[in-house]
Length: 280
Ligand SMILES: NC(=O)C1=CN([C@@H]2O[C@H](COP(=O)(O)OP(=O)(O)OC[C@H]3O[C@@H](n4cnc5c(N)ncnc54)[C@H](OP(=O)(O)O)[C@@H]3O)[C@@H](O)[C@H]2O)C=CC1
Ligand SMILES: Nc1nc(=O)c2c([nH]1)NC[C@@H]1CN(c3ccc(C(=O)N[C@@H](CCC(=O)O)C(=O)O)cc3)C=[N+]21
Ligand SMILES: [Mg+2]
Image 1 (cartoon, rainbow, N blue to C red):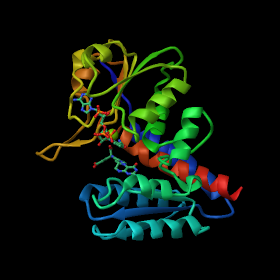
Image 2 (cartoon, rainbow, N blue to C red):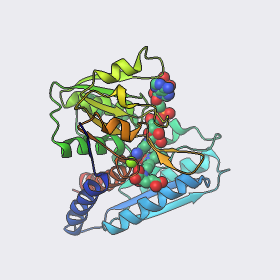
Image 3 (tube, rainbow, N blue to C red):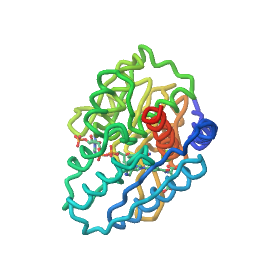
Image 4 (cartoon, protein in one colour):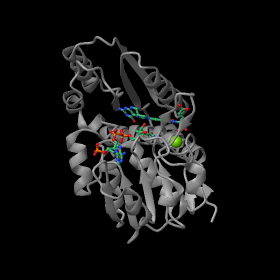
């Protein structure tokens, strides 16, 4: 079987258009504040594309750039000001943060109602309880990509490769809610290839370039590659060897052009959701 490439750019463009159409009907302009500490070039690129996408959807985006040496107290004061600002509906603090900053404390300082990353423990708790909440953008985007393929999740064996708080764990929670039978694999998993081969839906989020080989993929599986890995030669590759895996999979996301664009589109959707919840 030669798998279909899932066009994340197209699904993301449709979602962005849907968000823009809803925003256009609102009597106010939703606001998004992105906080960038330091000058990590990769983060700067993400922040610019978030800015651009927000503006195109009619969302008032502002980026607050703080020097790499910013003290924890100063960052917390910035967040307190954004929490108190009624024009700000969504707050995103770009990760990773410099070593002098306690990322946990920063995330916990964000008003959960404005936490468009869905990283605050209150929102994490709601997600795991199955209550409506702000859901982390990347796993939310993966669910929408899965929906676009038409794959039936109910009763399906799903394997999530990776257990981070920003991708693997919320991904497993969402797939469980969708009635998949979910396995979470990680660096201590005994036989990764064998676990992967059992999966009808495989979501890879490990940060290891092309670790998932073609013969790890079950014939007809749907494969979502969350990985974004920059190689020394400058190429961007996922966690899956895409061409090999596509030889077995029914469908697979490319990198770039797969999950990445969905993350940004879901950030806009979360900003709209937060604005509607806050402003009625
Ligand atoms: N497209 C997008 O929008 C986004 C893409 N990403 C990308 O997704 C990937 C994962 O990101 P993130 O979740 O933040 O990464 P983390 O490094 O936080 O987590 C990686 C996970 O993979 C596991 N792991 C690492 N190496 C192995 C291995 N050799 N075998 C099995 N498991 C392993 C780790 O296991 P253990 O827990 O045991 O250490 C951990 O659970 C990265 O490439 C990142 O760039 C991330 C966010 C958004
Ligand atoms: N608080 C916080 N929230 C995040 O959501 C967050 C973060 N910090 N830190 C970094 C990661 C990574 N991330 C990406 C977003 C978009 C693309 C994206 O659009 N990628 C494109 C192209 C990328 C390129 O060409 O460099 C693609 O895959 O097609 C990728 C990665 C969000 N993250
Ligand atoms: Mg991608």
